[in-house]
Image (cartoon, rainbow, N blue to C red; front, side, top):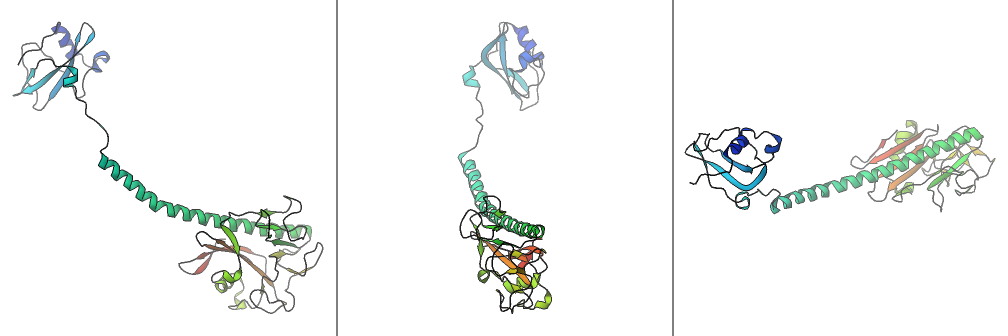
Length: 309
């Protein structure tokens, strides 16, 4: 095998001795070990080691790349070869099969996560609407006590609000714009009639006195057609008509059955039901005869109502 010849052998020796110097280190391959080569004298290295080097001539890079290889425990020098021939860079990256597997996993995980995220979003919208409406009822209650005037919380037939405190008693959220406290829900959340709500009797057993029985016969539920109304004492009441300065009694009118078909002249309670029309979840806001406002959500697997506050 021909011997590599350099114009300056001492330079080659210095190159190997001082390969850790910044100027030379960038031209060496990784895992290079310190060694000293005396031309014409072979030396032994552990089997399996393979080295490459770049020659230098007079401070300029010598672009021919030589090769040193181990043969019978002796490191031999081969003839210099071109950089294009000897320098074969390993191609890094992913195979097509690996990319397909990764993309498939991403698609499967996304497909499983999307329904969970959407369901959580729908539940959040329903809970937010219920909380906002409960807070609106509390606002109406406090304002009635402050103004010594009963106030109803109505659901208008038109407009941008889903409910408001009707301060001017005209059955609309309009007097003046922004003056009447109100709430607006996500379009997916809507008020529902009591007749379409699930397990109504079970809910009444949770927030009304136990002595009322299964049909809440000791109270009148929702005697007013316009919605929950609070009197000057902060208690639910029934007004014959909506009028400023009018009367609002704490007992239902004689003969008023309410939605629970009870006899009149009884304490008053209110219920309002919300439903997310996209995923079918329910929430209820109740007002007990004592004026306590509570939120409930319907647990479909157990067909029961659970308190939120």
